[in-house]
Image 1 (cartoon, rainbow, N blue to C red):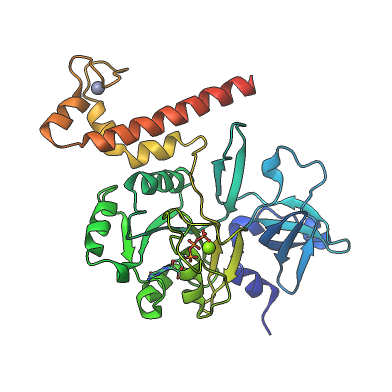
Image 2: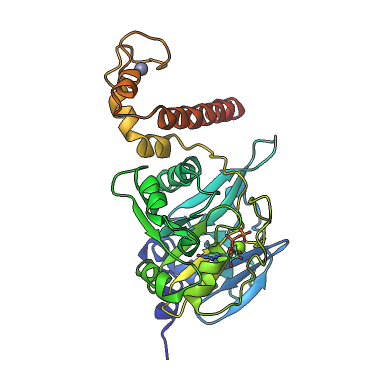
Length: 331
Ligand SMILES: Nc1nc2c(ncn2[C@@H]2O[C@H](COP(=O)(O)OP(=O)(O)OP(=O)(O)O)[C@@H](O)[C@H]2O)c(=O)[nH]1
Ligand SMILES: [Mg+2]
Ligand SMILES: [Zn+2]
């Protein structure tokens, strides 16, 4: 029979988490991992049990202390009530859509992020860049997965565009419905590994999960919406176990990913521009009409494209507004 430790490791348990649990705590509580979050209930799995429990932690504040999918929780052995969320390896968040500036947790304790996009008119470098910023911000290994290669004659055009975002970026092209084609993604889905899938609605996230699991258990979009934007087929976030022992975290497609506090991620993804900008004559150069602007010079010389520079400025501006707002609120 499997030991408790082995069973936990298959769920993604590792020293980073066990080191947070004191001896006394271990006597009264057991660790469980959050598999799904519903309204008023969360599904958790431990070494020897699974439960549906209330998600509320007494006195948890700020709201980040409440559990999200992928989290490790300690629950009371007797009452099964959660006592605390263990410190996270990482946490994916976004700015909640709408006027109110609120952050929304997407997933925690992720080893690899599959950024899923399809090889068709929905493909957008700007959108991939946003997801990549998110991955770099929380220091999770990103893999761009381009689906629907069977529906295009030129999958390489899409792959080349994606690779140009960042040198060394891992980009895989697949037919998401073909097991042989998606099998190379298994590299990231080994025992105890957690992979989160993010991307627009209709990109093929749930299809990938189904094919990797070898089942059609998850509902996927039946008919493609005529306007190409897609309806949301998946509505909740949920972890799915693979035969190989990995965990896939399926999420609903987002119409728009609004970054929250992503300055570090932006600098990493757009490092090429920042390098050039160091040579601008003024350290606070706005790269508009200032004399001695190295960024504009690079655009003229063809070493940077104005499209990429514009996308960078848009993200910087968005993030700047956000950061200023947060500073004000904290004060
Ligand atoms: N031909 C082809 N169709 C695909 C491929 N991947 C996904 N599809 C189809 O595209 C549609 C959308 O796929 P889903 O897996 O539901 O997309 P999703 O990303 O989970 O969408 P949401 O749950 O709404 O966020 C479905 O009809 C799939 O069958 C692919 O590689 N090739
Ligand atoms: Mg889906
Ligand atoms: Zn400049």
